Length: 405
Ligand SMILES: [Zn+2]
Image (cartoon, rainbow, N blue to C red; front, side):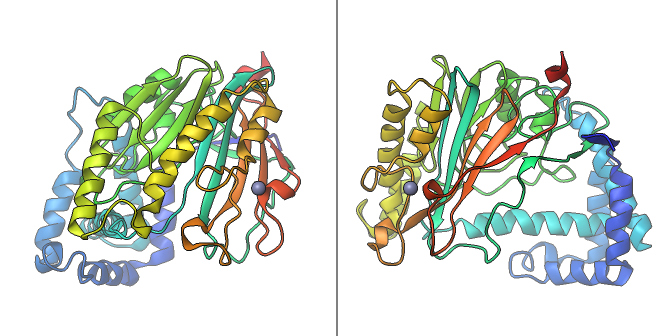
């Protein structure tokens, strides 16, 4: 078998499989259960299912007509085919399948909004980007409280990775190892979460998340898509996106807003919970102050420690990436294993025995080389070793089309 194996994406077949696995009765039961959920029972749940289903099928049957978002016309048939497939597989009507899909979607976006209400648990991911003698590098530490660790924690893959890739009906294969088919990094180097009291997610069904790497060849196109599809791809945090030419953008986002910073000097960095662009920086500050006021607290309150933590670490990361260390793999490793005292530390060793404000632990630390399509990952071993103390596990992905020339 060749590596990668490339097969055509078939949303209808995916829908049939999902519908068949669920079955008609379970599908109807799940729809009702979600409609009765406290998140939905007051509005959608109070309507008659038949009336709601009619409205939803009307939305499903409405073809996209949005001149500023032509990509919708390419995603739309996928969504329709998927819902039709579910109906076929479950042996139910298109109305029932559409209603199930819609109710699940709305419950998801309301849950995301509810989950983000304060107080939030501290985290603190860090990301960096640099171009140097070893190629285009991104680095990321994923941090969390010490108590959050899955029982099966650990890297299982190593060496050459076997990939089965799905080719969409238009655009690029999204997940060719570290990048999409044409070399845009699908995974940025930044953090996640980070804004309190965000605005509710916009209901854009029948669309769900728009796969930006399917439509972007480079970071310029990616930045444009991020702005045009902000409300379609709810998210909150800061990320660095890069492509194999060495270009990068920093994308700062909340559910409804986006700030883009273009990178000019081959170095970029980001931390969770910190926005640098003028508009997003003003936004996060306004939201934080409103939150502090609503809770009768001040910025030093414990559950806000990470507001200042992220900003301080952001400044420290900038200094680390600009050190005279060559901008290669060793430089990136030095950034990700920095052990400055809290709150500047990039590699985090807190735990139940440290002060409450300093309990974050770096769970995963990864350097990605977009040029060679290889990743070097290290994972925290609970109770035994921190990321910086274990050997890197190398993942080597098969060559992309442009690698072969
Ligand atoms: Zn460490």
